[in-house]
Image (cartoon, rainbow, N blue to C red):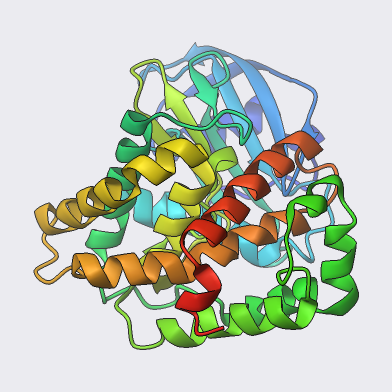
Length: 347
């Protein structure tokens, strides 16, 4: 089948184009009309689509969601968009991680732009919000989903998956060094960060130690950014993950720690974190990982990865409400103190 050429702009997402895109995997689909809603822009543009069909043999929904870089400066988004396209065209078809159903995904190698056509979850799911921490059942469910992903490629990630931190290393260190970290601390949530973590030099050293201490650990496919804002809970109460632009290969503890520390209230984390980590390890074993980390190894790795969450303070202004950033940072700071994260790194 001839690949569908991506439109050059959002206005090119017409009934004719959408018919061609949707019929790639669902032959015979013909769209009669499509109405685009107002786009919202974060790290890509999200556009709700109201669709009617002239022919719909696969029973596709009338409410779709377009996620695309069309109309945006693709330079800084190119690699991230390509990673998410690869996730939906390859990884999501291999392992049944709970994600929005995807009906079309493609990246134009020439322009770097990408288009995803997904199920619109707005009427059928509750989206994660750092201001609303998850309960124990949802936390356990999310860790089971991460274990499903991690176990599938445990110590054997596919070729071409970018390593973490890889090319992001200078970007991350740039956010944390000198004026970058001082600007982050000037935000309202910055007042929550205690000494000595207000020192750019110490935060950079801690980050580099986190990376060095991960060398030699089992590497797997990571979500790469599994914070609470990238989750949703369906009407069945089951948790899924959104926004796969940070797909990468790295140590499991990066995903697990960012998810657990950032998604649980301080009280729930303190009471259940060991139990939840043990549940994750058992889920790995059930999924075929013959030698998962021991509980002691997992606890040490968890403590060493806590400080990654502080980078949420460097999120570009306007991406999330400041109250959401404050809630996330508050939980990360509490975990860093409770778990003696600096001591775990030898600092």
